[in-house]
Amino acid sequence: MSGPGLNVPPGDPRLPALRRLRPPAFLLLCVGVLDILFCVGVLVAMLLGFQMPTGADPSVVQQAQPVTWSLILTILGAVVARALSIWGAWSAFSLRSWGLVVVGSVTAMLPLAPACCMGVPVGAWMLFTLNAPEVRQHFT
Image (cartoon, rainbow, N blue to C red; front, side):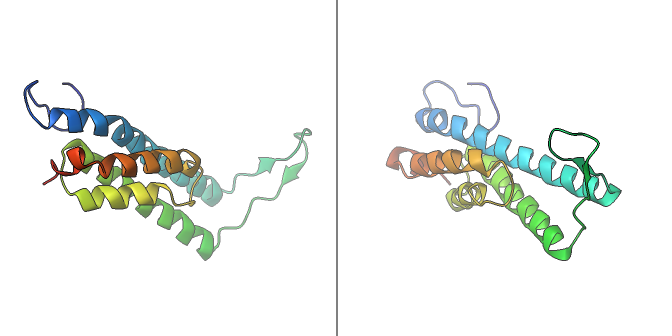
């Protein structure tokens, strides 16, 4: 079986668990990476002072939102939460640290950045998959 994480032979008893875990873990990884890229892009755009056009008339320019501590802390919180999601997804690929994978799934569902719309179903799918006894028994 190809892909990130463990590569087990066809007769390995962990193979069915890995086959069930890889799709939600991959999507969890995608959610984390997309949100981190979004947060870094927003922060860079705001620090450079980019202005956004509003409505149908591109000549009307809205003043950029000032950078505030609450906004910076929200962006940092989103980056930390999505880093935990990425770490949890990577742990799921290698069947390590069941608790960390649960934390990564829950942090993907936090509404701190736009990809949480995708993070809620993916995190719920991962939690549902993790609670299956045939999957949970193979974690170290």
